[in-house]
Structures are given as C-alpha cells and as structure tokens.
Length: 202
Length: 245
Image (tube, each protein chain N blue to C red):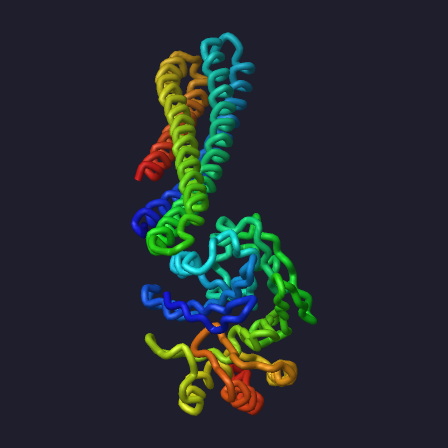
C-alpha cells in the first residue's frame, strides 16, 4: 500500500507541476499573439510588396488564439487531474483500511456489518480510478493537440522564411525577425508540452 | 488491540481498547473507550487514523457497527480523532459530540456525513437509552476547548489527556503502584498542561463527582483510592513549565 500511495502522491504533485509549467506556455502564446499583430501592421503598411505574407499572419493569430485556449484547457484539466488523483489516493487508502479491518475481524461476531461499508469503499475507489484514467486521457489528448499545433507552426515558419527572403529589402529584416520569434516561441511551447507529458508519464 | 471490560451493568457496558501491539512504532499508544447500551454505543476519543483498522476490527467483536450512533472527541488532537474521515464513511448517520471551539478545525479531518454536535463551554448531558452521559468542562487541560466524560451510574470518569502517562509497551492497563506511576505522569502534566488556574478549576469540579475509575486516553486507568490520590497530586503540581525555555 505504501509504494502505491507513494506513486499516487508523486502523480498528483506532477499534475500540479504541469499546471505551473503551463503558465510559461501562456506567456509564449501571448508573445506569438503580439508578433502576429506586428506582422499584420507590417503587411498592411507594405501592401503588395508582402502580399503573400498575409495568410501567414492570419495563421499566427489563429495559432496564438488556439494556443491560449488550449493552455487554459490544459491548465484546468491538470488541476482537475491533481484533485482527482488526490481523491483516488484517499479512496485507495480508505479501501485498504476497511479491507484490513475486515481481515482482522474475520472471526468477530458482527464482522458482516462491515461488508456494506467495505463494498462502498471498494466501489468508491473503483469510481475514482475510472475518473483518474478519464482525466489523464483528456489531458494527454490536449497535450497532443498543442504539440501538433506547434509542429504545424514549424512548417509555416519554413514557408515564411522563403516568403521573407523574396520580400522587398526594406521589409525583409522585419519579416525575418517575426519568423524567428514565431519559431522560437513554437519550439519553446513544444518543449514544455513534451516535458509535461514526460512528467505525467513518469 | 486489547479489549478490557471496565464496567458491566444491567443496562450498559464500558470497554477500553488499547495496547495495540501492531501499531506503528513511532506513534504514541492510546486508550479508546466505548459505552454500549441496549440499542446504542458511543465511542470516546476513537483514535488516530493509523489505528482505525485495528479499532474497527476490535469494535465489531462487541457491537454491530450500525449500533454506534455517537462519537465523542475530548479535543482536536490527531491521536484523539484524526480517524474522523474514516468513521464518517463508516457511520454516516452518527453524531459527533466535540467542543464547539474546534468544529472548523476538526472538519479538516473529513466530516461530511456525521452530524457535528458542538459542546458548549459549560458542558452538557446526553442520554443513551437509560444512561446519562455528562460532558464535563476541562478547558486548557490541555486543549483550550476540552471535555471529560462522566457516567454517574458506572462512576467512571473518562479524563482524556488528564492522568495520562507515557508508559513502555506492555505496561499494565491499571495503575498498580501509584507512587511509581507518578514519575511517568509528571513531565506530561507539567509540560502539556498550560494553566494552574485551569487545573484547579478542573480538580474542583471533579472532586464533586463520585468516581470509581478514572480512565485517561494514554497510560493506565486509576481505580478506587488512586483516583483521589491522583486529584491531590495534580492539585499540588506546578504546570505550564515550558515557559522560559
């Protein structure tokens, strides 16, 4: 029971840690949003010179908004997961203690009066375990989602580099700067999401 | 877990549960009590969470679990009542009688189903079938909200931490040599009890009761003349010695 409790305890700490790590992702997503606004302004100013850059800025805005939404969802789910894993830990402990009492009292005249309580504790633990698995699956799905968005961002940055290279000289440096910032933010978000996943898988 | 019948009357019994040989080595030994009447039972200071399984197993040797309709906690310490969350699952329809002062604190142990019946500072009595059970104020002895339990029929005073002694494993359940026992109580009372005034007040109240057994939550039970000897000893003892260290 102790080793299992220890694992569960690590798990709810890790889930809480994930929620904390994600605050950095939120900052990066807000940076992408800011860069997207800069890019939009630049595209509007440059007109036909950087016309092909417009879909890229639209993508950046969408990416930033989606990421912010996803981070909020992951954060919420990580907190729910942390609470659920704590409930699971408590119900597992209660279940084990009732089972021990039943075992110790096997020869007692009123041992059968423990049966409904022990059964209830067992059922509650089972329900909590199901809940825990459900919330874990949901959290992993959200982390998958954010990672795949960042992979898409990498593809777009590659395209953007080419577009920036063909833009008029006066806009080239600014566009390349925006692409670099987008790439850095996407990589950072992907790195944190992967770290969160590993921390939960541990 | 050893179980000893402290009193067996026509209408009720007192049982003491303690000296659990399987308890984790670093936790203090505790005595738990149960008063069993025809249709009800009350557990007095049911103990810490680490003792819960052993206690529950011991209890069902004597009563069906649904006969336990009341719990009592003399104060808020974990060795008294940290098992509350598990009793809450076991006895969802029971009542907990405990100091009003500690309600918001005790609920941290988990008290979702059990009804918390706050004991007023001046104490109160309840009836279980034909038995009257009195909750006697013992504030600051040692906790700031604290009660003893008195059964006038059985003449038993459950005194909580008052009269407690730190004894080695396997020590007898009753005080056999009062003079030798005093040294096992002295430090506990001097250091845990904060107020000479509170001590005098409790001794004065308790001297008015007819007591055959004084049953503390740790250590050994006093019987007969040793009860008065204990009250005399406590009356003279300087407590609150932690100040100035």
